[in-house]
Length: 148
Length: 65
Image (tube, rainbow over all chains, first blue to last red; front, top):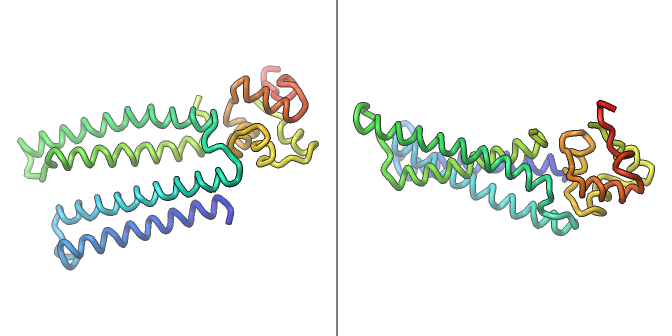
């Protein structure tokens, strides 16, 4: 199996497992999907994101083991540089995400009739956003090459 | 910037994997350098030139030349 096929297979399996996790977790919490409220949807979405993140972690470990077995270095100057780009933009975008979350919480608490996240929820959302943004940017830069 | 890596690899019957292993980088790095999507450091350019038995000047062609 070549690398492109393995990547696509992993993406498909991750998407399927995350979707199943979303539905099953939601049904455990709230029964039929028709009766789910916003909190059950959010809790299930967080569960699905955790499953996807775990799957991404397993994939990275497996790929590194395969590379080591094949005699390639896990990192070289190009991967270090592109990961540096990804990390830089992750800091900027995550900071923006946290500011938006702060504004949303303030508006939801004071003016809008919307559920506001408490501190642990906001922290978990920020950590997950950080991981997802870095993973996405790393993937993007690794496909695009040097940005300068 | 263009490179003659592909041409020289063919001359010595080396695949991207072979060259990557020879100089200790990932295959994607060789692919990106060949396609002009990554500018290698002087050290890496030197290593590639050495592996292909040529010089940096011969290996990399700058468009303003």
